Amino acid sequence: MSSGPSLLKELDYSVLQQCMHCGLCLPSCPTYLETGRERNSPRGRISLMRAIADDEMAATRGFADEMAYCLGCLACTTACPAGVDYGTLFESARAEAELGGAAASPWRSFIRFYTLRFLLFRPWALRAQARILRFYEASGLRGLARKSGILSLLPARIGELDRQALPIRREFSDAIIAAVERPGGAARHRVLVLTGCIQDIAFSDVNRATVDVLLANGCEVATPRGQSCCGSLHVHNGDLETARALARRQLDAVDPAGYDAIISNSAGCGSHLKRYGHLLADDPAYAARAAQWSSRMRDISEWLVEIAFRRPAAPPSGAVPVSLTYHEACHLCHGQKITAQPREILRAIPGVDLRECPEATMCCGSAGVYSLTQPATATWLRDRKVGHIRSTGASIVATANPGCQQQIEQGFKSGQGAVRVTHPVVLLAEAYTAEAKRVLS
Image 1 (tube, rainbow, N blue to C red):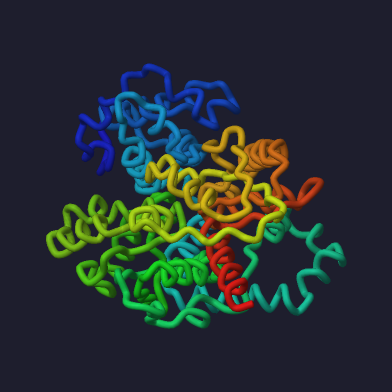
Image 2: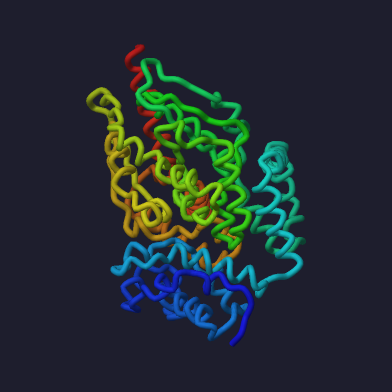
């Protein structure tokens, strides 16, 4: 079968051949667990990719739909004994599907342009859109729209989007974090904090807590103004061209050699940011800096453990332990292989009773925009996750990814009971604050 340009054909063929078809990935794959179909498993998808590389099939609508059905959670990479680089295969396959236009339609093309190439490519546009959403919520217009029943007259998809709308913060990161902040004593490290895009507008409190914790551990913290999206959502949605443009923008704005570490507090972003060296490996103008960038990238929990973070002092005796459980964001535990460090931080917080959550490494169904594109599977995974969290009896859930936080919060809102869902670094920052108050009193 003859076909046009193909990203899968351009891949090193040994990457496609690496899968032994042993099936050890099957129990870890959420979509295979849901359907029991080989096609919906990692090795089934790799077989489809290889068929395209071998020129045995084209990137059809069926292929595009299958790649869209994959969460990209990378749980299969943790289970794989052969070390198959499924992340690279998955990114190439989604880009292949977009390149061929198998799933294209005027409406889909508009949505992709508006979100990926307009909002997420222009920080001012994303923040302007966020302020509109903030006004819609704060003014009471959203409540009025829901009570009036007008949403029921619109396509069902509109109502679903309204229910999943981000909780926009009143102040974004630049308003609550200075460009450079220094610790009280001598600085032992100089780091740069990435505020992200969704993290910036919806979870700026996590960014503030990240800076506070770094200051408490002797770090001078730089937080550049008006930061851009890292490109993670673009890669996961098959837009490699825009992802590379955003990576180059980051490298133009930041000299990685000037910092001991570049810090991310978002699992999905951090996993992608560590791959800048891979993403720009063929760009002679950026390859060296991209590799240096990747070598300095650290998740906040990874960095804190690396520098032997300070344990907060214990509270007065007799304090009631706080029950807490931890959900492992896929791109932290599977993408970055970081699983012990967040637990070390949580166990260091005084008064915490850390309870292990069943299937802690199973995807919650957020997976970037997956909860919007595959709502049925995303809801099934969300409810499965919430059930496991409830079984621990914990009153707090810690997780290190904004999408996971929102997904789990929505799961509890749709059912009985409530828990607090937050980032481990927020809990550590609160422990430092409580410690300081005890000293002052």
